[in-house]
Image (cartoon, rainbow, N blue to C red):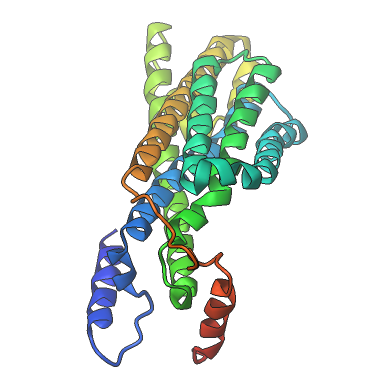
Length: 297
């Protein structure tokens, strides 16, 4: 984060200097819809990728799913996203891009809230499927329109720069989500499992909980094969379920925060006879021409 702050400071200086070509034109952040939209993008990406990083571990090591079955269950997210992406373009004409992003974020949060409330060591597949489909539908609605929201007021000739910054914000959010929320998951797993094993009276509670956490749950199947450690395996499954519950609730809260950030985006009233952004007639072509005229690095 310190390096990121130094980078932004350097780019801001280059932007203010005359005759320089900064890698990131920070003057774009003076556009309120652009700056607020990128903040929302970062928060949304943080939540979306945070849950997907730990979901396969829980499906395989807690519920005992095979790799193929795990992939099929996660594929439900893609199915919901595909369905929503197609339907979203027609809905955007009525609800508007910002409105559709909000609808998507609400659906995502509801799906993760449902997932957090139902995640257990014996969760039925269809309940998980409904929650993930709802989540995926929200992803499709929100992701399909968030770029339009961010770039709505960016001048067409600078659309390429704006799109690059928006993509970087999304990737930064996904990286932070994977780092922070996987740490949250394993911290919750280790703490909860240690407490459960201590209640069972096991003298090696802390060592065993650390071993399960370090293996990301992979050693649970080995513990279940031995009668002496079968109860520890059950406790580990319950602890992993607790960890994904915490992640589900945390990601849902972040998505709500991202939705609230969209209310800071100013309402846009396109003038009659004028293009409204990169999708306006000639906007994409002008932006493309600007990109082609840039010298090769």
